[in-house]
Image (cartoon, rainbow, N blue to C red; front, side):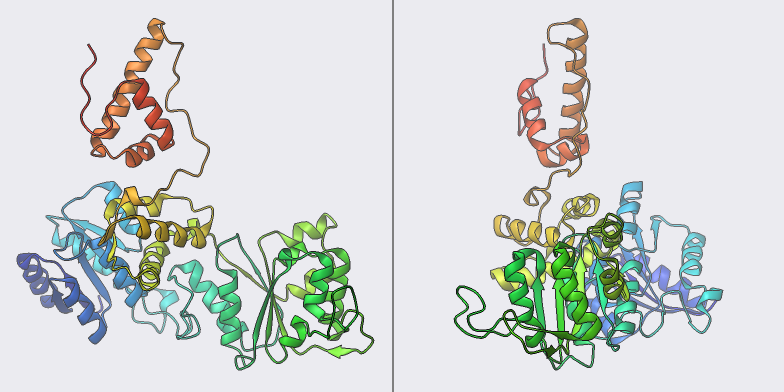
Length: 466
């Protein structure tokens, strides 16, 4: 096995010394840290190939430190060390980007196996020393991607396409659900292109009726219509030698699609009410949250315009498909919102992070930022707690149990069983109603109504039924 540079982060001196001694004897170069500050300091000054990270740290939760390490060195494998060897903890650590998980007291052979698994090169890694050492363009250099956050495989693919296509004046079509960050991709393409010194002009095509949209895009002459008191340049002119980002392109009408096709094919247009042909010199980046190919097949979008726009497609993954990025996004948004709100939040609690990772995020990254903003405005520092998130399950609520008509023997037995289930969930969640509702798979308001129905107190163990 190749020699690896390993950082051991654990507040237990005995574990640090044991791992350092054993791994050094086996040819590895080992450094150790007992606190968050030490760990991040060593990562900044000494490159490492693998981090062995304790889940319980004195100055920060292991999950928070996992996020910070992934943000600092996103390609470096991280193995979690914990005495709390539950399956859920292991799953949560993997979801947040850990490569593997070892429980304490651990078997040294198991530690060796994990190190070998993380550090052994494969055929596809020819020319690279470790799994974590990827090509130089996998995560492009800042400042091109300063607003885009994520180190998952799905986002690395997006970075790679953007990096490759930005330098070429081809039309790009960005697709993805609302809130996935399509505008940020357009910005990255512009700022990494030879047009970066020119303007980046944006227009949401769904925000305007067709008559106003035409004027916004192509401009108008004085007197072209009621209210046109002077000549006005459109977005194509304003984006001269730069980039024009057309968001929600799928909302344009057939007649507007024909006008856009002419600009893309011939590079020409006229202002509304004008007779002079103007030449467009702007790169077009379009975006939509709808399936344009499906709209073409249904006759709702021009096929020729579709192929003109879809020269290079970039599909953004929904947040639920890149959950390992949630921790990085949380840290990024907390820093951003601290500055905006004058707050000093250090992170989120483990329970809160578990909720954030498990939630399906129908509103994607935009929804995550909004949830954190509300939590930071309503909650108390230094950590966002689960109760501050105000998140409810987005899916349809399943019934917790069939409840027969009240008064029947079957109904009495079922009610007692359901009451017991509610009490058990509340006890396991330390009487946190939000967590208990999530555990039961029901809405929080539904839980409160059932607690009231069954005479279950809201903040203390209930008195047994006689």
